[in-house]
Length: 257
Ligand SMILES: C[S@@+](CC[C@H](N)C(=O)[O-])C[C@H]1O[C@@H](n2cnc3c(N)ncnc32)[C@H](O)[C@@H]1O
Image (cartoon, rainbow, N blue to C red; front, side):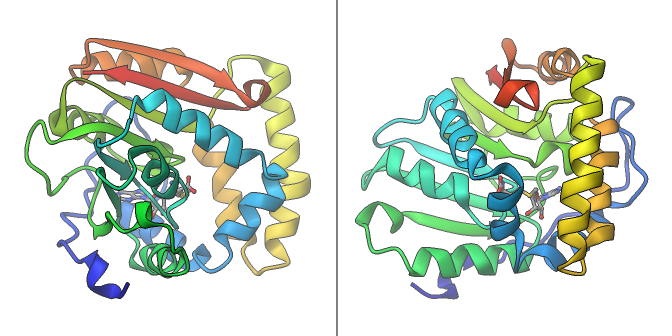
């Protein structure tokens, strides 16, 4: 498969608008550049930092999305494609998977990983360069949506949730996995210690310490599980439930349209 699988939809407005719940100390363009810089080492670092556990959490996220054989599904902020590949296995050869991200470099990694996979289920997978706050898809288009470690990085989280709601079919689910902004002091301190003493020093050996220092700030500025549930309801979802995973270090929001 070639880069024909990358449909370069225009990246709609690197918006700097902010929803009252979201806050940010960097622009959407800064974040896009950050994810492009880390693209070559992103997968390796994920395995190192989570001791491979992120694979389990991603499988859980796919399972919570309700995607099934033959579904037409979207993986938002797909990065190098982990969740999109898992979705392919779920929906099979009669399904359709779209991975969307605003970092062309991440999509290039995703596309080259796709080329190295021979199973038929990975053929109905396409990559779209686009912005989560302005999705290039019609209303009521998808049977399920996943987003792994993406929403935390989107500046206008409300607008992104409105878009997820718009492109989902009624009754379908969005499954949104991310770091959990815990209200428990012990967990928050543990998370902070891990980032400061393991993640940032290891990332520094790849010349990426600044990029990974951003992680701690982004979790502090993220929403708690309860706030995420409110955000989903405010965006129009009929129900929303946040589950803690990985001992409460991660969380998964399941929102039903
Ligand atoms: C931490 S990575 C997660 C990648 C992948 N989902 C995973 O779980 O491994 C976050 C991704 O979100 C993308 N991203 C952040 N904000 C975005 C936006 N507004 N629109 C599209 N992609 C965005 C970044 O480019 C990056 O690839």
